[in-house]
Image (cartoon, rainbow, N blue to C red; front, side):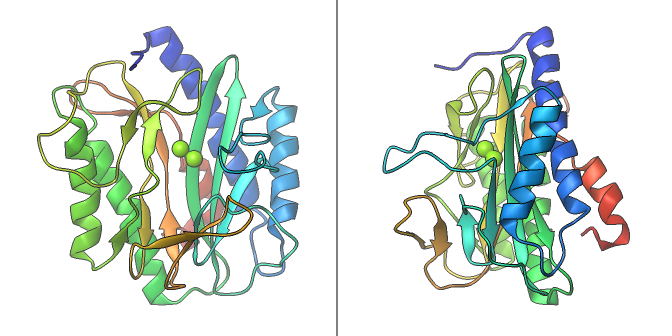
Length: 265
Ligand code: MG
Ligand code: MG
């Protein structure tokens, strides 16, 4: 069941989502070779709790195994999504997708950004750049009168035109009181198909894009999702409200990219 949000509810969603952007910006300040994703997780959790919010990911249930043990997902290189923070230091040339969720005043924030660690090859930078572009191509379609399939079509066609793979097993979603609400928002689709987008629909669009094949495998921890071929994957996510003419992006990369300066892609 799809719940459309009122303007007041959208403002509360914006607060939760802006906190995610601020949390990711805190991490942007310290991501460099030698830092561990567990260190990043600790900083994120403290920052979220200091703001009076709850890290939504921590304890998030898993139908296949134990609850998620951390406040961020940290997915390095061939990890597509749901990487568990660990003690392995980041290396020069890595990429790390940090996905983060907050619960604030009864509403959820959810956003993800793929960071470059040190000096990253042009090939991998292009994967990140194209994935971020695809996110905004999808957002352009998130307006009143378009259909859900228009979003997926825009994301998919942009990435496929660059020769990349589009992961299908994990998708975007509605967002509100719960982090994952209806409808599912796939990163592939047919133009003009699916439910009509209405004012007040709030969704997260989150392309998960692979350098090689789109086939994935899951680690024995039942969370970590990797590319089968071991090639890198990128992941960017915004939460937004559908409006007439132009989507209202509720999360923000602004502070992240201010911190990154000319290193932002
Ligand atoms: Mg997310
Ligand atoms: Mg999400």
